[in-house]
Image 1 (cartoon, rainbow, N blue to C red):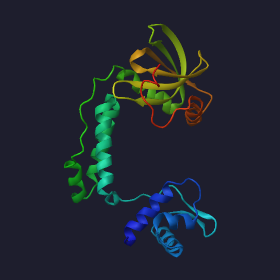
Image 2 (image 1 turned 45 degrees about the vertical axis):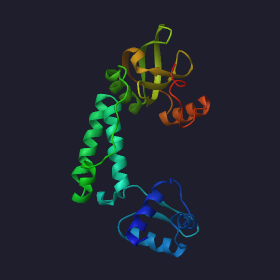
Image 3 (image 1 turned 180 degrees about the horizontal axis):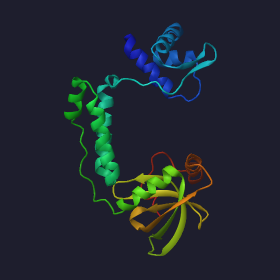
Image 4 (image 1 turned 135 degrees about the horizontal axis):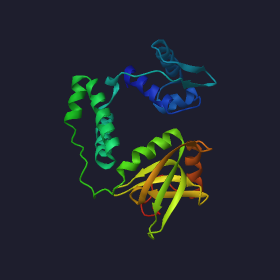
Length: 237
C-alpha cells in the first residue's frame, strides 16, 4: 500500500475509536510496523491533524480535521449515491429533499473524474410498496427528537382504539411500507412503538423529557432485546 492511502486509512481507523487505541493495534489493523505508525502519526500531525497520545498510552483523533473530497473511493461514492437515492425514495418528503440536496453538494465539490462516477452509478433503487401516510407528522416528530421534547399525540391502535398519549420520542424506524416512532409512553410507563399512519394528531411541546435520547435508545435496545436487524412485524404495535 502506498503512503497516501495508508495515511487515509489510519485517519479512518482513528475516527472509529472514541477512546485511545494503541499503536500496536493500529499497526495490526493496517498491516504495517509499529515504527511506521509512529512516523505516519507524526506526518498527519504535521499536516494539521490533532492526534493526541504517545507511545505506550494510545492515540485518539481530536475533532476538527477534515479530509478533502478527492479522498472518496469509488465504492464510497457508490455507497453515498445509493444511500441518498434510498432516502429520497423511501422516506418522507422533507428527508428526501435533504438527501438530494446533500448529494448535490457533495457532487459539486468532487473532482471531475469522481463526479462522473456519481452521474454514471448503476446502483438503482427499485420500486417499493406504496408508503403509508404520515409524512406531515414526521417533520414535527423529528424536530421533537432533536430537541428532546415531549409530544402529545392522538393514536389509534391495531384494534381501532383511540387514545391520547404523552410520549418521549427518540427514534424513527423506516420500513418499506410504514414508519415507526420509538418512544417512552407516559400513560403506559414503558417503551412503545407508534406507526405514523395511526397518529391522527400531533401537538408539539416545549417541555424537555427528563432523560437524554441516547440513554433512552440504549435502554430500549437492552430492555426490548431487539437485535440490530429485526423483522418489521415484530416491532409494530
